[in-house]
Image (cartoon, rainbow, N blue to C red; front, side, top):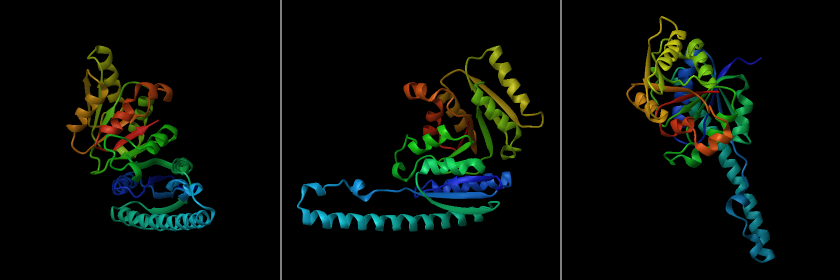
Length: 285
């Protein structure tokens, strides 16, 4: 049986450095090795360039098809070589950051499917907010990230473009089943040992809500540095404000409290937080 590990997923985007830095941090705190994964997606050069060959004469068409096939082969070789270079650079960065141990994995296939396959032995999955194809689409999250978070059974740590080592936890809490599972992780995991925690609830200031927050704080134990924040308003705004006011914050929250169908219709606090917050976000299913 393979040892539990931190699964770090990198591509050619500028988020790769942040993913490696967060994976190294998690590796040291959990005393677990890092599996550094890069997936080369299969692509079809004919489809990617748009097959216009049907509109021209047969002789030209044949040579054009040959050229497209050659281009596809060259493109595939380039992607494999680029992946090898990325993995080597990532491994070097992880080792220099003091990761417990590092192994690299270079795969072909679908990115989401490969991540879900490899996460089986992982304690946590670390992934960038956006992939290389949507790297500069500020204000959006990558479609693959959203698919991974929705399908994954493991906590997913989403890397912002720039990260510093997390020094405190802002825990978004609403009493939902997902939030309760996240609280359970917060109580037991060595990933958070010794870090101050601010439990944030965006809701009306009532006796019931104060008691709910107090109960959550008590579960973290008497020796922990725990504060609570109860503030009315939209969760996105309240949480964002607390994160902004907390140096070295990492946001932790339950992922996608509503069903995927409802989320598609009305939007999701989870998606909004990942999209707008510029610190690492740890999502617990």
